Every structure is written in C-alpha cells, then in structure tokens.
Image (cartoon, rainbow, N blue to C red; front, side, top):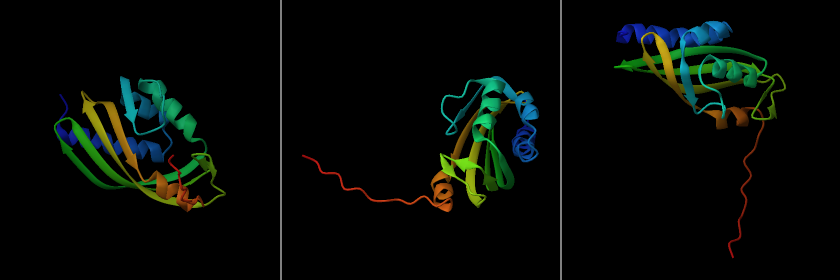
Length: 142
C-alpha cells in the first residue's frame, strides 16, 4: 500500500514527465486498466491510452506549473497551470500563439500506479485565446 506522500510524489512526477515529454515513463506509472475522464474521448485503457492521448495532442511545447497538491487516502488532486504553444486545439489553429490555462487532475493511485485520472481544464479559455468567438444563436421553437 502506498502512503499519501508516495501518492503525491507520483502525481507530481506525472506532470514533470509531461513537461519532459517522457511518455514511456508515464506509461510505466499507469495501471493496465488506467482510464482518463474529461480528456480525449475513446482512449483505450492503460499505457496504450496514454500513448494515444499524446498522439492526439500533436506537436506541443508546454510547461506545467503545479499550484496545489492535495491528497487523502488513495486520491490525489493536482491544480496546475499550463503555458503552451500547440499546432491546434480542438481544430482551431494555434498560429504560434501562446496559451495559458488552468487544469485540475484527480488521480486514483494504488500500489504505486495511477489507476484512473479525472481532468477538468479551462478548454473554453484556450479556444478563446486562439481567436474563437462565441456567437449567440436564436432558436425558434414551434
């Protein structure tokens, strides 16, 4: 059984490995049944899901800064800020524009492995930074 401090270290290391683009090291810390909620839809479980997640992101330069790490039992919550330049996000071209957004990750960690990850990020803020605009639409109900 992992201690809370061990689990917090694993959660921090997960983002550090993302910063360093060490995808295979992330795969080593995920369980074969790992799932991500709130990320790219349809990811396969386990390390192959991690690989597919990063393939779907495409070329990106990013830096995660950890703001808070809170843990209780086998759950660790990480609140972080990402500064990145990405080729495109949700189909919106990046045009080399830097984006900054916040995200919260909840990891379920047991026996030194991440079993599940829940992601909640400011994706709307990202697309607005890339120039997307919200246009109200009037719907006529008959």
